[in-house]
Image (cartoon, rainbow, N blue to C red; front, side, top):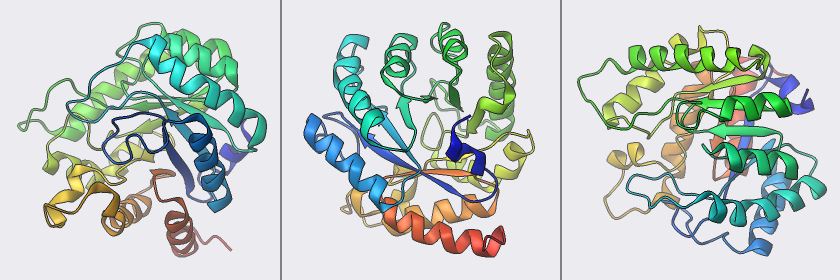
Length: 271
């Protein structure tokens, strides 16, 4: 058991985003250098991050996919060093089983699969083999505005959970993510946040990652860049916490540590 995850349900955990990519929507290129990436991870840990999530391929709309070799070239050296120097669990943000396998061997403890076991059929077996925790995210290849998005999410997770159980992954190692910003209209993203208790009713911890995403852009002037969407991000995440979110995935760690501390005192009676 990962020690920090024993605290799920008692306080909101903060997952810090570390994109070692040249093209991520918010911070592409800022941390693609190894030394800079490690430094930023240290800073997030010092600011209070409970988990560091390392990704080597942008998943923003219109992104250019990279191969598994390039993805691993970017992330594995960083994960290997962070696993040695930081006393927080490292997560690998990937939908590829080969990259997850390499990351877990390098010291990652969590797999963050943005396709919820439904893109790479070998992913459940890799997670099971390593006894890893896994974040199972809802996603869609195409946006369909006519959908009841929560009904679609529940169908998706029913299938993902079946794949996990077939592979022998215990329910206690599963975390669900509604996939804010993935395969949804702006209204469907907001609806997913509003109806989070329906997802929480499945009985699993829930992670929400709305940090700086385009769903928040409607509340800003068009020229405001994603990195300046902090207040909107905080609003979305605090609303999610009030509806049952256990983990928030964020770029701005310190602000979320402080805000979620207040929310936890009020909502969870945390001393």
